[in-house]
Figure 1 (cartoon, helix red, strand yellow):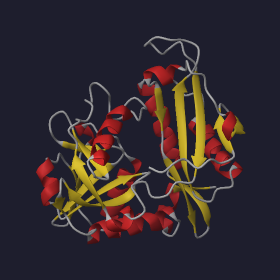
Figure 2 (tube, rainbow, N blue to C red):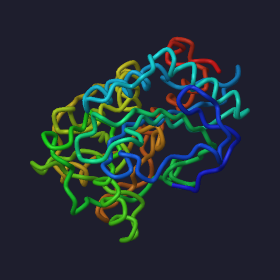
Figure 3 (cartoon, rainbow, N blue to C red):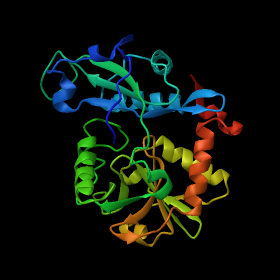
Figure 4 (cartoon, rainbow, N blue to C red):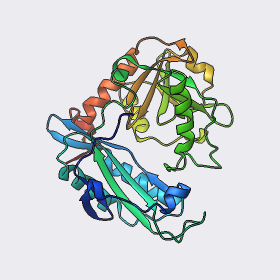
Length: 305
């Protein structure tokens, strides 16, 4: 959650523009009504150069998110993939965070967005450990939020929209204000959903479990990656609903996400889970080896810069 580090260029509507000139009008529709979808992607410096982790899948999800809110992204997945690589190269970054954003722009006002044009930007910048400098090694403490996850029939979890993240922001503000690193939200039925910007897993008796998509969560690409990695390592992986007390009694708990990567959780609601566990650390190490190009069988997840 560190400040953005400015670089040289942002890609906007097909053109690289200087960082300071990538501006938008104050009457842009998305600014007033949250009509925007976005992605978070990471580029890693590996042993054989830089590569972006699951770039195509992220751009596919961006386009799908747009379609679900009746907003056609005016670029193909191939064009968005190349634009992201072009932006990383132009800014001469070996490692970075990549933020594509498609939004309803300036031209009309009112809650119906369909008359507003669609603008697309891709920004990149250096971004380290999302939840703090020691999070990946030591874990973080979290709290169950008093805010509930927005209903799947009100604000679908399948859509990675700017509007959805007001819910996340409220939960995170509350947690951090109370001395925790992050929040966990329950859904409208009281089941564990996700963090404010992460999916969540538990490990108990060697079984890895995570909430199902039907509980209103984002279909996270890091979540999907960790599920595949865990199965390949021989672990049983279950998608099932979790109640909050299962977080208290789990052997291990961890977050996954593009920004958070694989972050251990060492306490939930002041119930100590302890130091990062063996399964979490094994999955974390494997994830970083894959992201840095050290595991050839997962090479299809990487797009070379």
